[in-house]
Image 1: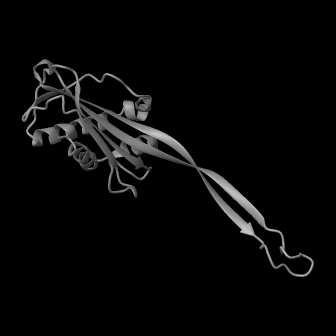
Image 2: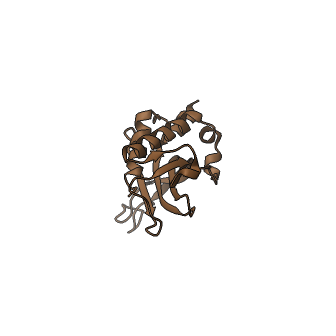
Image 3: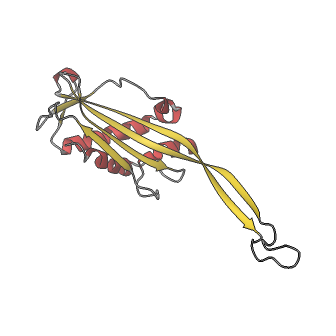
Length: 188
């Protein structure tokens, strides 16, 4: 349960010390209409990070993401249609967790060099150094959204929201909406 909560937490912005990393790309050669119609597309590829059962099989998380994307696009004047063949744009998304390990080292020294007392010579008493290396594990959550032109199937826009997550983060509809709004604010 804790694992699922931490995975779902990739969208909580307020509880983490680090902010999100948002990047996007827009292909100017693929037109976006002023008031497009859109539909959900088939999820064409699934990344290995997304195969984590806590992400891939979390229907609550997927439902919240879809609702947040729909709310944002509706507020922009985009009109959702049920039939992808009648949409001008196709929207897909992927969500995942990347687990990483970083080695952190701490060194402690005792003794001193130079100007030693009697018997230690000019360089002083020996110096001893101890180094402690420990692994630090962290998780980065990500949401990747694609907007494709239906007629050509070319990507008109793609955006990536990445954020370090921890076990105290929680995914709420509000935190997911904030993340989606921050990401889709780049859609122009």
